[in-house]
Length: 200
Image (cartoon, rainbow, N blue to C red; front, side, top):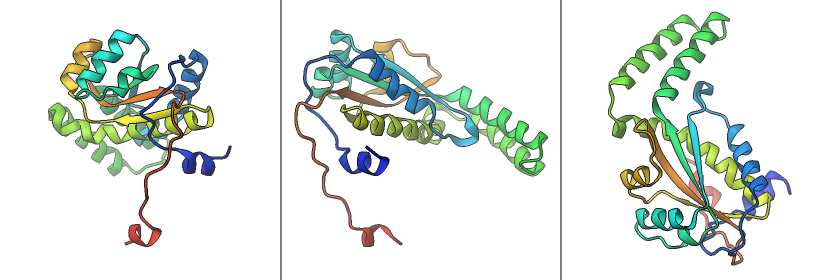
């Protein structure tokens, strides 16, 4: 299966077979995420794999009782490491400045922006970092298609409750839950806009 086929075949799955997902397949998905691009190569993604039945049930409740989450054999909780993102962005840009890949003014702007970001609260900074994590999650989603697995992004959730369930650090922002398992249905992509509707 090539990338185009995986993109065309991908669809959200909300019904899963009960059989567990082998650990090696979860690792393949995480490896795909690890290789994703990120701004300044900051790599802010952090993942928690949840297979425990009780915890999956609690996550489903925290996601406003989206019960299919509890029935997925695995849930990958995708988070953004906020302070790590800022620190790695600055250090990478400084490294690029030292070797002449970016102008000194770009390094200065990045450092100034980082100082401002350190003053922001979680609600302000989380969206800035989250898009990097979203890229990594989509890498996992497409790799899952290739591996014969189904997935479903879940963003509608009570973040403080998810963090409480998993005892997550205050510095982590929960970007989404990714339900994972063997499809218990034949997934079908929803209708997509025509090309003429997305070109401006």
